[in-house]
Length: 304
Image (tube, rainbow, N blue to C red; front, side, top):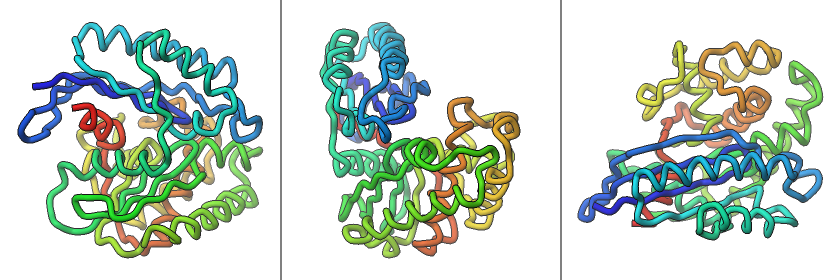
């Protein structure tokens, strides 16, 4: 067994996975998986820079993760940074802070690399021989990957729950005009994605990341967030629509009171749900398979 650690630092959250990897099968045996909402991408779409307070929140999480990695004795670590740090003018400040704390340089990967990691992590344990469309709805970007065992086509586009919320939302609840503006951005981005990825060509839609898992948890009417019940759940299109309409009609406080809602997602979940709904409408998917395994698992597998 090889003990590895992977860190995925996105626009909204930073996540850690420490796992043992079987040398023959590539199976991941999870030892520790955790997530912290740090909102690294706060204001990046508007200013082009990482805010000082966002950097400090991220560095605080890195210090926590460094202690976990040392305690569990991971032999190798890979730190991958995605959309927000790709876009920021002052990303060198971010890089220096991570190196000081964790001793490794964050790899600011391309959208295509991000898509490949997401595909590997999401499909490595799925049964069947069909083609998958894997959709990873992040804070700053969304990745689309089509493939069967291997990536056939991938595209990253700049629609994410944080970016769209900061760009358009000024009212509580979200106004009809703001929702329409979000939908228009998503549809334009889907047009771009379709230039590279045949979105309607796959038999199975697989949805990743916090917007999708939160919509699934609400659709399942769970009394608390339960990864075991959410992972590999199949949510019909009609339920995605119902949850999205509920979120659109709700205030910040009403969303915060939903038992499965993480506090860091309350203000951005409406945009995330709209992205998922628009994707299902564009592809004609009648259901989405929800995966808790994603880019983080792909990063850990790549380390081993």
